[in-house]
Image (cartoon, rainbow, N blue to C red; front, side, top):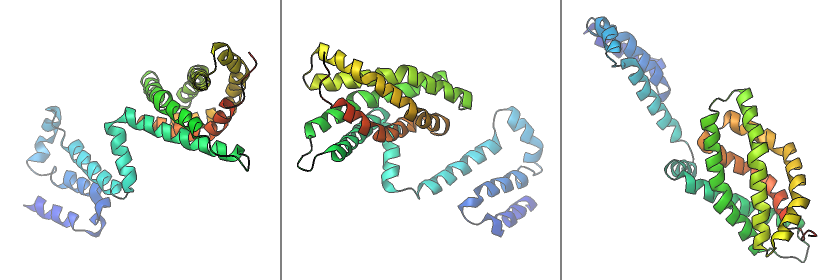
Length: 252
C-alpha cells in the first residue's frame, strides 16, 4: 500500500507532466514498484528467468514517445515513410524516376534557347532510366554495403565511398550512357565512341562531387533512406549528366 501511495505522489509531481515525462514515469515504476517487499526480493529471479521487466517498460515508453513525435510529422512524410517500409523497392524506383525527370527538365531549362521547347521524349528516357535501372540498383547496392560493412565509423565509411567510386559509379554511368544512346538509335560502334568520349570525364568530375555526398549518406543516414538521400544528391549531378548524355554523337 505504501508503495502505491509513493508511486502516486511521483506520477502527479510537476516533472511528470506531458509525454516527455514517460522516461521519468518508467523510472518511478522501477524505483517504487520494483522496490516493494515482493517484487524487490524476486526481481533478480525474474531477470534470470528471462522476464526483463525494466527493458519492457522502457520499450513501451520509447514507443509512446515515438508515436507522439511522429504525429507532428507532415502527413505526406508519414505516408511516404510507410510506403518506404511496406514497398521499399517500388517506392525507391518511383522516387528516383521523379528526381531524374525533374533534373532533366531543369537541365533543359538552363540550356534551352529562347525559341526552344522542352524535349519530353528525352525527359521520358531519363525518367525510365531511374525507374528501371537506377532505383532498383541503388536499393540492392546500399543493402549489400550495409551487410558487408555494417559499421558507421569513419574508416568503414571511407571504404564504402571507395567501393562506390570504383564499382558502382563506373557501372551505373556506363549503363546510363549506353541506355540513353541506344534509345536515340545509336549503333554499337557509336555507343562505344560515346563512352570513350564521355565516360572518363564524367567519372573524373564525379570524384569532385560524390565523395562528400557519400560520406554524409553512409555516415549519418539510415540504410532504408540512403537511396533517397543518394537520389536527392543526384538531382544536381543529373542536371550535368543529362546534358552530357544528350550531346551530339561522337565520331566512331
